[in-house]
Length: 164
Figure 1 (cartoon, rainbow, N blue to C red):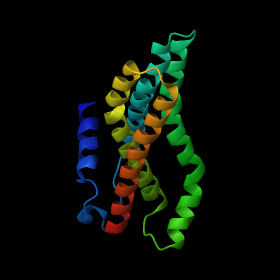
Figure 2: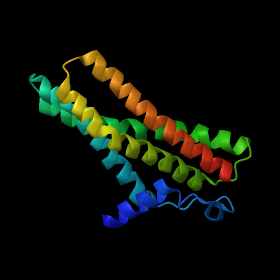
Figure 3: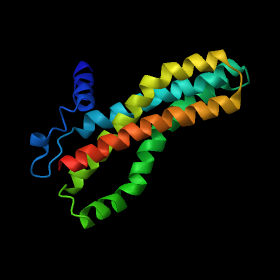
């Protein structure tokens, strides 16, 4: 597990996306490590999202919190499954040199960056969850926090593609 976190740290610091490592259109990333990391990190943010239901006091609140912890990483990975074929074709048409598997690895890396940023913002969400009872505020806060994570992940993806 510590090795997985070390590899995540290398990805976040840019050690896995240096130009010398991307030469030849290759992107080296273990899907066996980073897909479970995406699931785990997404579940962490989902866990903090589920706090609102727990502190709301309604029936089924723990099941709701569990469902959110499952739904958030599923949203990211299932979206990748649905959109990956077209993304690969578009990348090939614009001249991207990444192979099919390398493209998949890069997109999984972008998802991992996205959920890692989200998971790091989870305690902020948790703080506001115990501080307010306003559901519209919590929805807006989730949109803002996941929007920040998405912008950072998109910047990572664009920076890596430009390095190619």
